[in-house]
Length: 169
Image 1 (cartoon, rainbow, N blue to C red):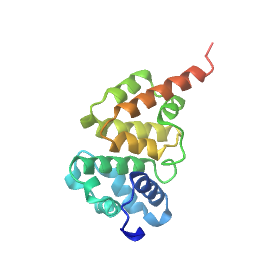
Image 2 (image 1 turned 30 degrees about the vertical axis):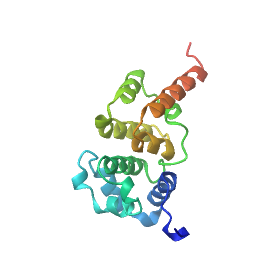
Image 3 (image 1 turned 60 degrees about the horizontal axis):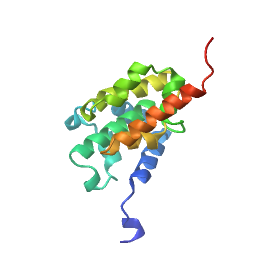
């Protein structure tokens, strides 16, 4: 297999999508399409999504895995063009933004079928509170089948940030 035919890794694809959504050349129209799309309706995915996913190998982009890529791109678009990269860990960002324990619990306990609802809410919350996202951590949370290690890391980072915060008196 030549260098030109090499299959991109998940991290390379995440980096590529993150960079493309942050460029002025991507266009506000396609970005708006990606923000408006409903991750629960993969059959209604806009052309902008299919254009991005054209580089994703078939074995990584069919069935349930397509739904995961759709959700990931939607989340990046919600934070693009400025807040979709360069952030601290999700747990730390959630604490800094004032995300409540109750919301955190709902996020961490959400079954995979509900992630298309709770994750966009989380991203909108973070963006509204001026926080940036770590696209790789977001990708691990959406694209990987085993969500437990990622959920544990979010909880750990959230409560470590809480422990480091000065106590109100």
